[in-house]
Structures are given as C-alpha cells and as structure tokens.
Image (cartoon, rainbow, N blue to C red; front, side):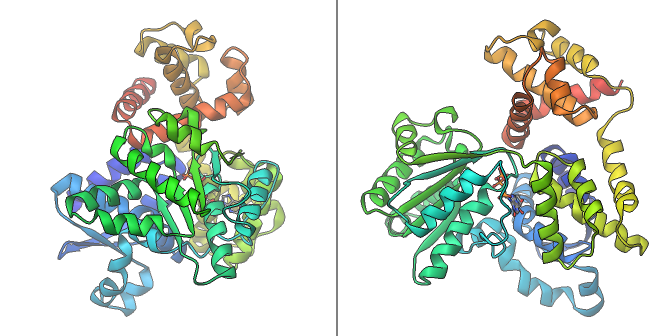
Length: 443
Ligand SMILES: Nc1ncnc2c1ncn2[C@@H]1O[C@H](COP(=O)(O)OP(=O)(O)OP(=O)(O)O)[C@@H](O)[C@H]1O
C-alpha cells in the first residue's frame, strides 16, 4: 500500500495545483489495502464528497497504471473508524467510487441555478443557460460554454439538467464528460454493443457533454459524436457543450464538428471579480453552516483570484484550521491558515526575470523571444510556461506579469496559465519540462 500511495502522491502532485494538492491529498491518510480496495481516511465530509466526486476515478485509473489491477478507493471519515467496520462502508461506498459512472447517471445535486452566483464574468453564460433550460432545443442549439479551469462551466451545464428535470421528471437528461463518452464508445465496440450505445445517446431529451476539448485526436469518437449530434439536432433535442476554449481553437477537431458547434450560441465564462468571489464564498459558507464574518470571507476571496474550485479549497482549509485549533474564523486565522499555502507556492527571492532566463535557456530561445509577440508554437508554449511559472512561483499579480512579458494584457497571462494548467493534466512532455524547470529554479 505504501508504495502505491507514494505513486499516487507523486502523480497528483504533478496533476493538481499546489492549493488543491495540499487541501485534498495531503490531508488524506491511507489506512489499508485489502481485497482490491484502498481505505482512505479524510478529515471532513466536504473532503469525502470532493474525493468521491473528483478523485476516486483518478485513483482507479492510477491503480491500473501502477499494477494493471482494479483498486477501488473507499473514503472514510474519522468517525466511521470509531463506529463502523470498514466492511459495511465498503458495501455502501464502492459503487460510487468510479466517479464517471456516477456522473453519467446523475447530476450533482449541488450544481443548480439556485447555488450559482452571478457576476460580470458569467452573467451572459448564466442568462443563456436559463434560456436554454426554459426553451430547450429551440433558441440556442447547441449552447457552447467555454472558459478557464474551475470557473463553473460544469455547474452551469448541470443546472440546465436540473431545471429540465424539475419541469419534467420524466425527461431523459444525460450528463457525460467527453472522456467517458469516448470510453463508452470504445467499450461498445469491444463488447459489440454499439446498438445499445447509439440508443442510449440518440434518444435523450438533453445531452450535456463536458470538456469537449478532450475529443481532440479521437477520430472515431468524433465520427460517432457527429452522428449523435445530427440525430439530436434534427429532432430538436437540446445539446450543451463545455470546453476550455472556442470550437475552432480545439486542435484536431473535425471541421464539420467545429461548424456545427457554432450553429447555436457560444458564451464564455471569465474569472470572477472580488465581489463575486466573496459572494460565492458567502453562499458556500451558508450552505455548509459555517460562521464566518464578512471581512474574513473577503480576505479569503482576495487571496485566490482565478479559480473558483481553488477558492472553495481555501475555504475548506480555513475551516479545517479553525476546527483543529478550536478557534473562531477571523481574518488573522484565515491569514494563518493560508500562509503555508503561499509560502510553499512562492519561492523566496525568485523573480520573473530569473524564470524568463531559465525558460529561455531550457528551450534554446532568448528572453526577448519570450517577451515578444511572435506566434510560432516553438515560442508560444515556452512563453506560456514562463508566465505559468511566474504566477505559480512568485507572488506577482497578473498585470505585473503581463508587464514583464513585454506589456501584455493580464487576460493574456491568465489564458496562458490556464492553458498550461490544462495541458499539465494530460501532456507528458509538458509535465516533464515543468518538473525540470522547477528543479533548475530551485538551485
Ligand atoms: N458562479 C459560481 N457560483 C457558485 N459556485 C461556483 C461558481 N462558479 C464555480 N463554482 C463552483 O466551483 C467549483 C468548480 O466549478 P466547475 O467544476 O463547474 O468548473 P469548470 O469550469 O467546469 O471546471 P473544469 O474546467 O475543471 O471542468 C464547483 O464546486 C462549482 O460549484
């Protein structure tokens, strides 16, 4: 178990942002590995929910990678250890562990319009989602929601599903990630169940496909989706898609899909401003019955500015810190709780200029290339990596980073950081380069 856990930690350390890693992975403790189940204890019900929703599937996948075996995580709370034998827990939790199966069948009950906070960054997307939920298949078909990591695309998309089910509980609503769609399709070929697969997808009233950018490079899946899309579109069934970028920016997406995705409406979600971030935290605190004064909420919101998922992680961290120390939450406690996070992220004495020099050297470019405007791929990616590292390893603001990169706009910096964060999830070369670069920057 120890070596598998070590393997997982290494893998997740590369995959997750530092905030997420510290919040979700470092706080978890592996208990035992038995009958192909790994029992993992996490500190709070919020952690448990997050693990089951977002991390369990990754553990199953990592287990295959590690040992070619199925190992299913069972997430426990400290209280479960006192009161319940893990066996009972196993029986209850095992079916949920394969997250994508759960997501296929159900919508997350929390992702509703009621729990969605609107602000300038998501107003348009919110309005379009409302229209679609009220008049599916007519006004905007497909609705294409795009934007950076953790900004509420999945939430909004699922809210449409909930609204449709509220109005018509018999409606056939299907939520799926593009990766699960691709896996289902491949399985259907292997098991010769293509007919069932087609029936399942082509007879829905509302199809929600998340993170469509992962269709890149999947020729067969794109072909299948093309037909699914046509059938649904022609029968006036609503399709909602999300992606981290516009259809024509998704590499290797067939032209005919790109053009179809543009038939309806494309709306973007951008990072929330401070006011919206504070309102999101307030709503979350109320939902979780947490007592946090407004100024502490604003403080937390001021510390995390580009990703709502990480913002939520920061709130959990502050809450855990307050429980551990048995103190009420206020600004100084929040600052203390988030201090390690900043310290571990930001290396003392590291400057943007040093990062630029190292990145240029690593990719055999000049610093001027990184600061310039040339758009060749061999320069654009290193430039984005240098911006990403400046953001992650220094405490410079987005505008400051933009300024140091030849006076670029802060939205360009944000886009670059998000692009690299996303690539890091799947691109082994980028993972490798970043590990090397970070190591060289520590010297
Ligand atoms: N405007 C909002 N109001 C309330 N909660 C929000 C809002 N935006 C995001 N969230 C919360 O932030 C978390 C991340 O959101 P979500 O998973 O929808 O992001 P995403 O854009 O789909 O991310 P990814 O690009 O990683 O797929 C969720 O818990 C969601 O409920």
